[in-house]
Length: 117
Length: 416
Image (tube, rainbow over all chains, first blue to last red; front, top):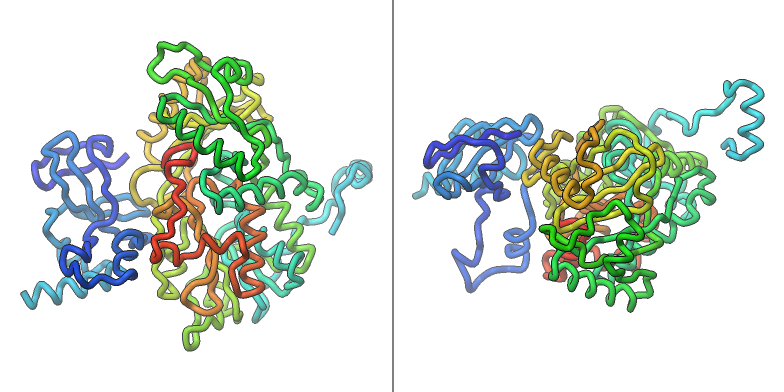
C-alpha cells in the first residue's frame, strides 16, 4: 500500500485515493514544433518509456482531493516516495543528481535548458 | 539423459529412489558460446531448446540471475488459450497451444497439460458484442471456439451466480474447449532438461552487468561470473528487459508492473474449467490439489519489487465473490506477485534490435505462460537465421514507429 501526499492541497491518502498517471516529464513533440516531427519522435512520445529499477519520476492525480495532477519521485524497488512536486516543476536538485540511465540524460538536458532561460 | 517411464520408476522404486540423476547439469560458464540466452524462464529455455533441436546450434548458454523458472514462469495462473482478436496474435498463440498438446511426449516430461476449456464470460452488452466479434475473427482463422448461452454456462460451471438481476448478469460466454491449464514449473523444468540433454549450458546465479559491443555489434557479456564472449545475445528477461536493454543503449516501449495471483485453501472439486470474468476483473480455475487459483489485473504503477498492493487483491477477490458466491467464506492461503513487461498495444516484441547480434523477446505482459512453446519456437528461428520468423515478423519493434500496432488491450480476456 502506497501512502501519497498531494503537494497542491496537502491531502494524504493511500493509492486508492489517487490515480497513477505513468511516467512524468513526457514532452509532446507536436506541441512545440507541429510541422517538424519525425516518426521516431512520435514513437518515443507515445510508446518509449523510462522503466528504471530504482528511482523513477511519475505523474499522479489527487482523485478524492483537489483533483490536480502533480509529480512524484518514487523508488520502484522499495516503493518509497522520495518527493512530491508540482506539475510544472522539476524534482529537487539532489534527486536529479541521483537519477540514472535515461533519467540522468533527461535531467542533464533540462537543467541546461533552465540555465539558458 | 535418463528417460522417464513406468520401468524407470519401478527400477528406482526398488533402490529406494536414491539413484535418480540430476535433471540438468550445473556447469561452469565456458569462455564463449555461439548464442547466449538471457533469462532461464520458460521462454528463454524454450528458445535454447529449439535452437539446439531445430537448428542444430548446441553451443548455447542460458544465463539466469536467480534460479531457473523463478520469475513469471513460476508465478502465473497457468492458463493456456489462443482466442485472441488479431491475426498475428492468433497465429502465435495457436502455434503455442498446439505445441502444448504433445509437449509432454516430446520432452518426456509431464507438463500436465489439461485442455479443460476456457470460458470467457460476457457480463455486459458491450462485452457480449466484443467477444462475438472475436469469435467471428477466430472462426475465420480456423480456431475451435464458440459462443455459449447463459444456460450452457450454468451447465459448464454450476457454481456460477446466474441471477439475471445481479449487477453483472451472465449474458453468455466465449468458450475455447481446447484451452486449459498446464503445470507451470514443469514447463520450465521440461524445457531445461530437454535443452541440457542437447548440450545447452544452463548457468544459474549469474547476473549480467554489461553488454560488450564493437562497432555496433555484440561481442560479449560481462557477468558476475566473468566475461563470456558471444556473437549473439537473445534477451528474454520479461520484467527486467528494460534494465538489460539500457546496457546496450536500446530504449524499450515497456513498463514493468506487478501482477498478483493468489490461491485459496484446497477444497473438493467445484470448477473443472477456467473462467475469466473481464468486466468484474478476475479469473479462476482449480488446481489438481484443490486450491482455487485466482488472478486479476496489474497494479497501476511501475514496480520491480515482486510484491503487489492489497487494494488490487481486494478488488479481484471482491469481483469473484459476486460471480461465484460459493467462494465467499474460503480462506486464501498464499499470494504473490510477478513483474510483467507491458507494451503499449499489449502484444509482445519478438525480433532483431538496432544492435547487430542482439535479439529481444519480451512484452508478453500478463499473458506469457500460454505462449512459451510458440514464442521459443519462432524466436529460436529468428536468432538462428538472423531474420524474423514469418510469425514473428508482425511483432517487430518497428511497429511502434510505423504505427502498425497489434492492439490486444481490448481483446484480452482480462483488462490490463
